[in-house]
Length: 417
Image 1: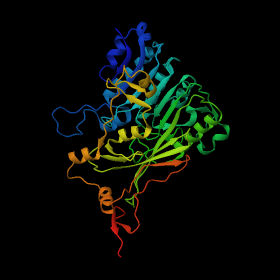
Image 2 (image 1 turned 90 degrees about the vertical axis):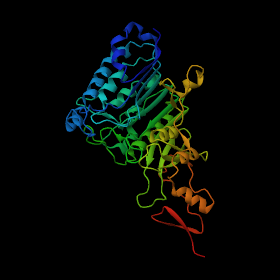
Image 3 (image 1 turned 45 degrees about the horizontal axis):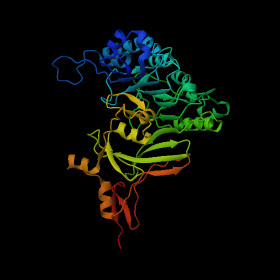
């Protein structure tokens, strides 16, 4: 049997663990583990959407039965991963569809154990739990496990519920994250080319990744505070690494997070922020969900002047840039590899729709932005490229001269002559 690229999902993970002979582990070059949220089992024939076979409160504390079976398979794969002595790319990725399941999460020690089992030949690493990773008694610090791989990595992408600069260096003190920089010691990563840290683990509006060790974590208790410390800490730690020459091969170092929309001013848009460390620039992309009942109705405007509709996860991928992509076969790979082996892999397109396509499918839906731009005969909302790495300004819909805002800032009305 030829392996080379291996894709494991909920449906074939257990069988692969049982059947793979470790003597064939050297055949695997890339391993993608794509996990779908495990839904709890339902009472047969009961129309109640919450008629679970298990107690809901128990599942939320201890996991549903399907999740526990999945955890067992993930623990069992560690020995198989250790046998993949020529592995170059590893991706652990929770699918955005379905969004979540009651009693589903990934215990952080399982992820840490898999990372520690990766051979030094593994130069491309992606860990994306969409914030569905949680602590367990005796948990290892996941960031330190990632740091152990850093000296030989080329491409790194991370999205976890908690993150901290311990990924990139030693002597980080989470008790006072704003003052850790004088003692922080960046780790050298001579081959590192790209880094993407996505600090949006849960909902695109309300949550940001927390700094490890700075809050009391409870299973299945999503932290939804807005705290700029995580992204600031990563920006500063990566800048320190650049200044000290730790990443001589670096081509792209990015930190992604979001700013919420205005609660009392509808002209203020939620904004995706990307810090481009090497360029010392910030990209700000305004977005808004036009139809709350449809998950694919997020409007976003790009730096190139495009207006696009898609899912929350897809517009985040747009903000990150094409650093990691999914192929039509389901493999997750860094863009640098896809570029050099484009005859082998076919990149799967992100599910973007133009404004015209979205309007055709939603003829009764409308957006006040379009109305405002029509009556003013000018463009009122654009993405922005900003100098520096500290700006936290949300993008606001412009108000042209001779006009003023009404209806909580959503609509424009012409001034009286």
